[in-house]
Image (cartoon, rainbow, N blue to C red; front, side, top):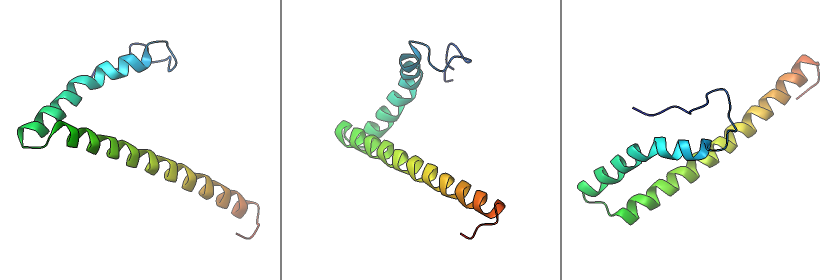
Length: 83
């Protein structure tokens, strides 16, 4: 079970990042332990996790860019302007 933020309505409370880190810790350790059990090294596992985070960040940026482009195109269509 993952703990939720301590203050659900306040996304900027002082310890929110720390609370998130503490909530992730058990799952993170489970991933590390599982990877080590099947033969991956800690270094390989950590590098793979970093790459997954980087790939997710890139995907989120591309998705946001696409959403902006779609919003502009929709606005242009509504305004009767050619794309």
